[in-house]
Picture 1: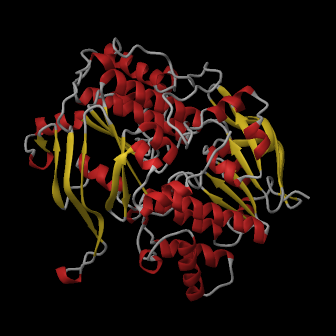
Picture 2: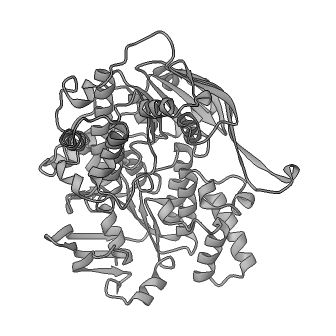
Picture 3: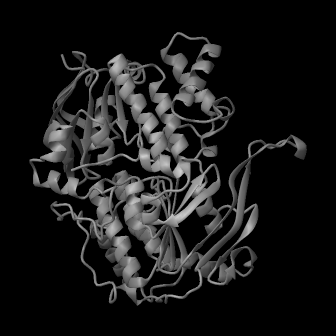
Length: 564
């Protein structure tokens, strides 16, 4: 008997224009001890299947047809209270966005202990010990101290590890893992995947692994299901699907995976119907609005120089200074980024990569050190006009597309806002034309301008964030995990777009990612960070072929290997 059986599932979302079918006539089985990977482009219905099994479809979504069985018991027709008891106890779920899974006003300890006591017969003291053990299992250092902190005090990757610990609290029979390693570096990713495989092997837990990372699928999943536009188009053993895919979409999806053993010029396009704006349009950027902005010439001087930057955050707010404790997120780092190059930062979550980006943009003031951008000391800027100019020149694509977009604004308004603030369009008609062009450019289609962020998948929201960042025609673009929420098909499109923009506009990038194969394809030079320190800086190919620091060697060794 299958542990989980989904029969002819159809999920629909009623709206004023009729019913939108997100999942259509899909049947899937998962046996105990098996890992089933589900892959496909963003919006294909992967996460919707997981939410439907859990009874967590966002209103007005509903299960229009089909049945769901767990160990022979039908669960899709359970009442709200019975279904609530099932969640966390028999089925655990690791959500794609950790900030929507965690309560921002409760400590990590409160949330873990509450979940453990809800499902297991343990005292508070026993539950507290189990909570610390779970955090250690998912790779959080100093777990006894950090469990007392709040979600906002953790990096994106560390929050994801907390969410994984929550899913494992009650030792469920089935785990639905929706992009469980999206925000994690390769070392922690390896720990988490080993933990999931150990649960399957020793406790016969079944796992649905929803991910866009084909390297993770290749090393973890027993079988793979490929989805496209709500339909299941191919299912088979992992080896068979990767080495001999039967469908054209599956073939092109696998071809778009960035290789880890060599550098390529461009990523292959994924074969798909582009009637909904899923395919990037071909623009001549030299005549496009983006290309009519200021052009930036190569010089021998660094565009940005980071000198001896440090940043520390308080862990408590004691009245007496001697009683305060701090965490050093960044410790005395220095590097230069040359005009027109892509400089990468890699390292484990919590290593300080995103903090460096936020210090450069002024979101966090540096504790010490200086940042010189185009001969301007950012710390010494006084006038509002000069600050606005710098903000126009330096833009950032954030790691989390959910919290970086205003949910009450239409997408067109979100993208138009920086154009309005910086007075970059002469007329309303020109501004609207630019917004529509940008939506086409990032592959969303012009119809997206009328919609709200909640109507899009995680990967589609990230494309909105990229379009907004491009709206000021920036000189220096900081990309903080820009493709972490994207499947390989859209990732290939976005990375090709970034390469085209750089080539034709001579843009300069600071590229932050934990995805080592992507870093190899995108970066001219890479800096490796660990525990707030910059341990190695090298030309990209030298770094991969001859790493000098032991930590760099371990990152490359742990990188998922994908062979086609």
